[in-house]
Length: 124
Image 1: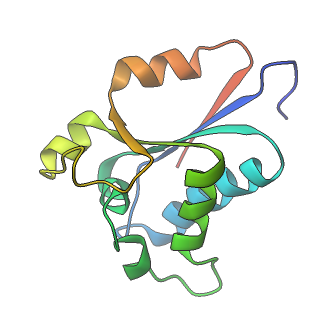
Image 2: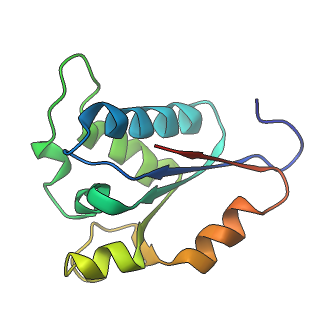
């Protein structure tokens, strides 16, 4: 449980369409936390990096799961969404390619967030 004054939940999605249940869990947990008033930083890494691109979340399908575009919209409106620098580069994704509100940042920023006082991290 998140406690204390500074409540930051850092969620790192490492899976995309290659592991749909794990991917959906990351998006669901992060968007549920945001809806509950928790400060959320959501990281798109590995295959989930593709969801930083327009239209890619709409291509994702998983029975009995909330639509990924809806969850991503919640995160963009109420949290922070970051695509991993190296993951984006490996996929030829540039800052000009990603959805508005998604930043591209690297390990130093991730480490800064997960080591902040009161921060907790989940990796999917």
